[in-house]
Length: 165
Image (tube, rainbow, N blue to C red; front, top):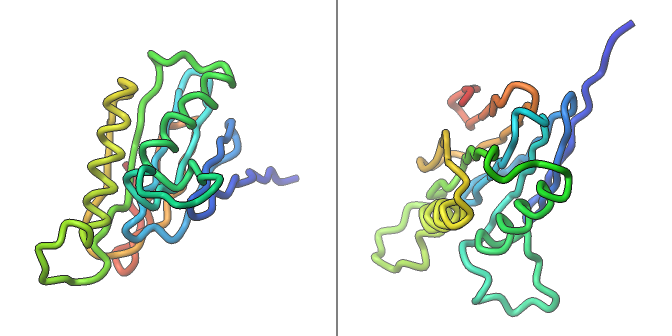
C-alpha cells in the first residue's frame, strides 16, 4: 500500500492554499514572484503567483486580484485567517523576480522582476508578515513547491537544479 500526497497547483496570476499532507506548487516563475504565506502550527499554506507589482495600472474589469502584489497578498492573508490561522504565527517565503531579458535601458518599467520583488516585500511588511527566506533575481525561470508540514520551499531553477529554503 502506498500513500500518495496530492499537489495543489497554482497557475499564473492565481492563488490557492493547501493543508498538510498536501503540498502546493507553481511553475513558470520568470519575472513573476511566487509568494508563500504559511503557519507551521496549523500546517496551512497559501501561495500566490504574482505577475505585476501594482493593480492601479489595471484596465481589467473585474480585476484579477491574484495578478498583482498589492492585492494578492492581502487576499491570501484574509483566506488564511478564514481558515483559522492566527496572523501572529504567519511567515513568508518568496522566489522568482528574475530579469528574464537583458535590457540596456534605464526605463523603470522594464525592471518587472525586481519591481515585483520590491512590491511583494512591501505588501508583506504592511501586513507584518516576516519574510524568512527568499530566492530571487538572476535570469532563470523557477518552479517552487511548498510543504506545509515542514515549512520547506523547494526551488527548481532552470539549469541550476533544486535547492531548499
